[in-house]
Length: 117
Image 1 (cartoon, rainbow, N blue to C red):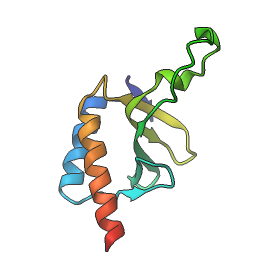
Image 2 (image 1 turned 180 degrees about the vertical axis):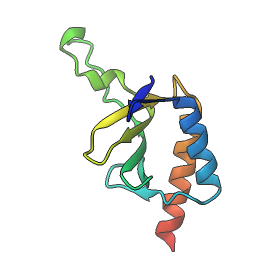
Image 3 (image 1 turned 30 degrees about the vertical axis):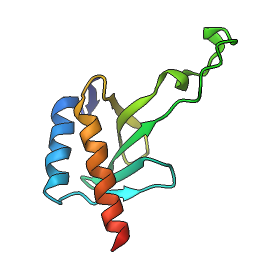
Image 4 (image 1 turned 90 degrees about the vertical axis):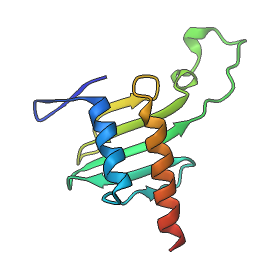
């Protein structure tokens, strides 16, 4: 999934790789959230990155597929980019960019390490 911000294309793979590099270099201050397995960081002043693991509820196969909740099909690890007003302008999952899983692990470690200080 590509996204536009200020008329500029954003390459999801390049974004994830850059965030991984900056996280490893200690340049990003990942924060834990109230949600389990969800971490956020502010970048560039007005932009927020959120990474999380979505664990779906068990699918009730007695319900017709068209009436099931959409999130039942969203399981996985995700990255979301939001602007200053909270508008999501990119969402990418590990199925498209496998490195999202590595980023989630790094963000978790950074957030937990910072919490222990």
